[in-house]
Length: 181
Image (cartoon, rainbow, N blue to C red):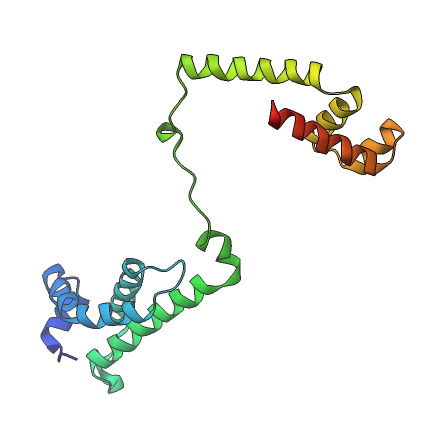
């Protein structure tokens, strides 16, 4: 740990930006070392460095020489505590959905289908509807439509007056016929 000049510290505490920059440059190895040891899901290296800088700013603002501890040791403790607090916050269960989720793509980056693709999709849709009318029985069609709307098999069976097994078999036959065609 480098010894911090008392004059440099006093100027940084008074708001001298050049002195603060020099102080940051001297403390950056300690900040980076602490950041490397605090990595966690939801807290990457750059974020941990930022937390260390916040800890250094708090140390500059809160340091009192009359307490007897050298500034470098006090600043190192403030940096380490800030980074450890950030790591603990990142590891809380309430952040798990954010830490392990996949970002959604931006709407402008999603390729939009052209007229040809839309026409082909429309033709496929019409052909599928036609196959449903010609290839599927009435029971299979009704079971498939109910399933597509998210209706449970048991409820469909009650509405159609048949057993749930009959509805499940009708769904399996409808899927097999539509896949095969």
